[in-house]
Image (cartoon, rainbow, N blue to C red; front, side, top):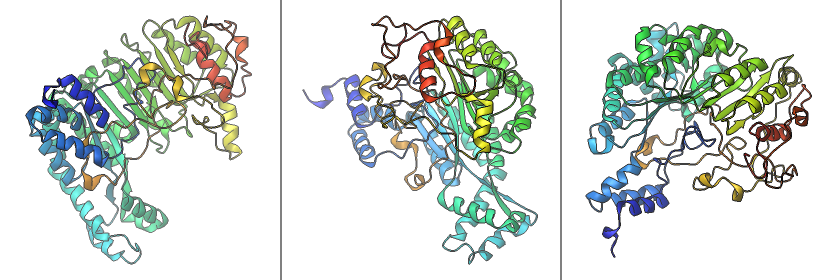
Length: 520
């Protein structure tokens, strides 16, 4: 039997061994959700893998079509003349565009001119001596290019064309991009305060513009896309959406099934988010089909607003996974939101959540164990009490992260991973280790652009399923029965601080499971 006699299913299995098929996505109710579709940008494809698949596609039309599923399931491009041109080329090839399921838009900082707007392009060459080895002409070209793209609305035209052509599109993601030269110029400008009067590199206007153009393109194209994510969303950019007609916002929100946002570390974050309260009410109440939600903030600057100032007592009938990150809350706020979704909620993520004085984690956990009868997993990474957290910052101590998988403090073995996760090699437990599997398509990034990586935005992942307790901790005595003492006294909650060992035990206790045998 020759290779041409093999079935398409078998050929796709072979291709998976060369480069994993990104179509094999994890359900939103699984704890592994977002580990594969994480906010950590995928690295450029391995050149050997790309070469092999490219050669495979050259064999015949049948192989070309099969290979295209791997090359173009995910398309990544940047806000630049070259990136937009390449995106348009893909969009105009229907046999390729139809395979795109995820589109990642890499957006650089915008050059914002100060008081001497008309002189900025003359100013940069004059700084050549001060900038040392930096190529000043590079910045002059970028300033000019950004202005032309925005003024001519070339990005909106190409994005609308592309998203219309991507008939299988499921997920749109906006990533913040900063190349090495931009980073060096930004550092230099920050050291020279006088230069901020002339030119700045700023993320909020870039985020605002890209969010508006993506939204307009989604609306104009009537795209089937139902998932939106951004790891470094600027509150100012979201505020710009407030000016849009409520019906426009509602139409986009009605299509959403998954929303994952992490807001960046802007000034006066509490007040900025409070200003977004009206918008969040419109969006969340219109999003009737929501299945998974994550809203996060910087770990070192937790939000102080009450939970319902953002979520407005909304109840999503289809919600199966919910997550928040970096929030100062009372116990009853968490309990109330969870109980509203008790009929379907299977995963709850409370990363970096701090309880205020007067609240106890034992109360939260007891309510979850007692009332959330469908809950399969809960993630409590770096939860703590507000007072203890603040004391750490006053003392100048950095709040330690959880031990990494494979370290001497955590003896978990990849051999004990959940069977459904075994084929995602390289991601043992993203809740404790910021490693993510790479399923990047060969055709998704221009080789000339691959040296610049999008910035990270808090690793907004619902963590993967894996045993949550180090094997060195002898908690299991259930003899396979998979049960814990129902009395919350076994939690050892002192209302002061939460240790790594405690919270790992608590995660299993909530779901009624055992550290060795899983859920009862």
